[in-house]
Length: 444
Image (tube, rainbow, N blue to C red):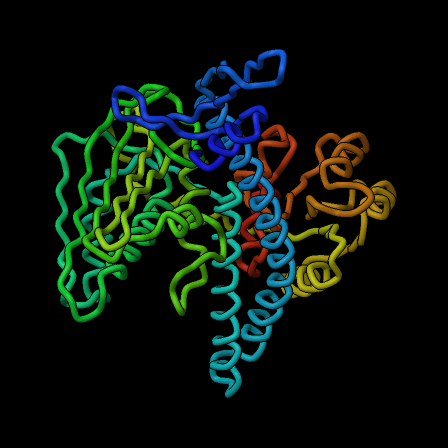
């Protein structure tokens, strides 16, 4: 500032600069400062006239829009990658599990095939993390007690953390429930707690303090420097995780929620990226503060439930398959069509296949009364799954359609009315999963 102001004084040129000025309360706010020289007839500058305009709100709005656009573009990329990988993994997991069923556990190749399935399922877990970051993760919400979930999570993690790290958990009494998927909330907590523990240098002693309480938030009470969240006023469960670790520089702190950004030698950089996607989908927030050499503080905010009873968490009983029929498989990926064909044939179904929407409509038009169920891919070139569904329902309004997608259920079903679909099949799928969906469709 001084350099530019001095240069303006020396040259007599107009001065203009954006800078932060400290106000009477000690807070720094952005200002646009402008000054014009006032001259005599001979050109001599006699005085300067200027004004400093507070543009802090404008700067924050620009940063918010930039951050939102950045997160949206990365989210679209992450979701697209996850979708394509799920299509590929459908062939890997489907064919490998079919081979295991045919060969049996006594076959000498069974352990190798089982290892391949486990590796593919780990890859599928990574795609779920990408989908979570993109805000397209699948949630099975229940009313759960956060304090109990965190106590269980910390107990599971103690054995994997070095003896130098001490955990302190403190929960307020009479905490309200939250409506969430316990596995997803546990994933968020484990990612943040693990990062906190690993920030404490090996061979030294440190602490991770965890507090759980209720916070009432107004629309303006969130101080998120990067403006990643837009939450509604109300009551929230606040999970605060503070560590005495190495802390982060401002440059590192600004990037910790980006996918594939990591400071760990073995890290993938997806833990916090998935966490932020999950929290956004629940209309919550994650606030992070850190100072290099002095530790970090993360606060996870999730909306409190309006009910005061927890769900039992018991899964629904699967519907038994009682009859067979003809299934029309519609998918533009040959790998997906072939694995679905093998699975359904092995279960005694007649299978028809279509590689695109136009071919599916042609096949269904010729045999509408013979086809029991249509397994329909959502994303196809030319004609999308939703367009194909509309044509099929014109031919037969009672057609049973199971939608299949590499995207997740929560992101997909919002595009359809409940009565339009007989089920949803998430890629990658196993024989058991496809049979469960078809059984429900046939009994609908």
